[in-house]
Length: 266
Image 1 (spheres, rainbow, N blue to C red):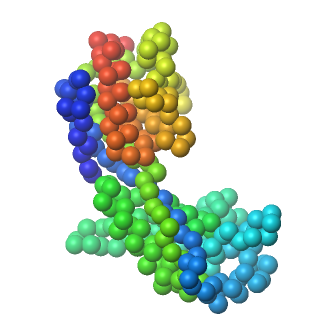
Image 2: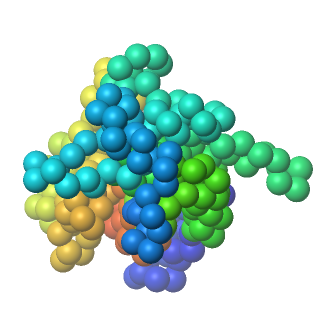
Image 3: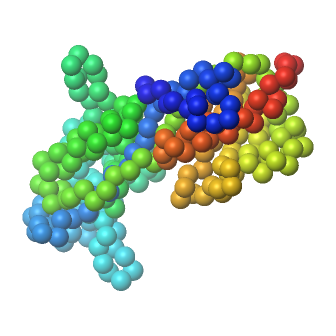
């Protein structure tokens, strides 16, 4: 777990009001495409030439007949240990990708990653990423897997990036979370930045959705951060794509909650 330093970057000292923010999980995505300098492997060509095998591997053609998919998922599951592909049947029925679970012991510690592999060449990496420095080694693992399998040996890594950073901390002051939605709606300066909902019959915490950070509106491309605040003061923040964004969201959240720090429960 990686602590994220935020104190001293804002008018308030965040550490006076909350415990240090700690990264709990990181999700990353890698993108693979055929290497134009390599020929299509014979094992893959057999699949491309057989309409049934082509469909069973989750591969599709564009409307113009061009092929954009590059990973035969059923072939991957058959030839790769701890890999499952069952879009129509099984535990993960309806999921369009293959699920590869990687486990190994490094220096006496267990290392585990889950790879969600899509025929388009996109690979989502989840689990076992506690720091940004963990991403590249995890990407190298799936690179080696693809190189080892004949039908994917022609793939090259195009890019990889962080798609979500989840971090947690705890407030050092009590707050009545059931009052937050009403109070936030009464404060124009606050409700322009966040949207709060509290439905304890559905979820035990207050849900805080960020609309903007400072003067910067948030979009799907920039990331749509979200926080969950619980009665005991603990909270987590998710939906961040960069450490900088995580710091900005954390600072904004604490600054807003300080406004309500005199609330007591109930």
